[in-house]
Length: 207
Image: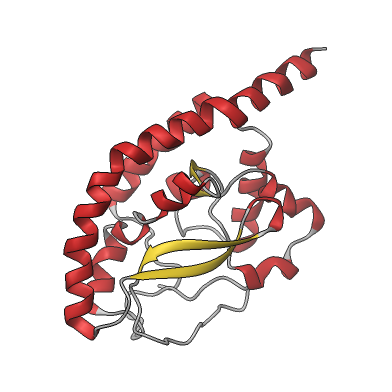
């Protein structure tokens, strides 16, 4: 009986309250996105003339394909380099990254366009960070619990560990989050994310 009541509370929070909060926050952030789009967009165009927004293919809820929006930080038609564990190569000296790209990555500005995903309903403000779609076949069945919930712009592993964990550790912590979603936990993650972004620690996977 206790577990049933807990599950009902979680479902109400996930389906209604969490979605309501996502929409309100996204609407509030939308004017900032428009301003950044003009500023960052001009900077990107001036550097190499390529597209401003990049659509990254990611694993969405229920393992569906998700096109996640980001400000483009890499050169046009840059090669997709993966680490041996399947994670995306990410280094401060990565020559594929543009000058503008380095700045928007360090400041996490490149993630702002994902509020459009949130408004569309295929992402949340808080949730497990979506993996590259090509990595789906590397997931164990129990690890796929991560995809029980919408992926987030930020999440538990990003807020508390960023890129200081192995792929396996990230997945296990994301599974834990997906099975323990709550308003209190999301609130803690939200404020911890602000602290982590300001500290600029563990930005890169590859040192």
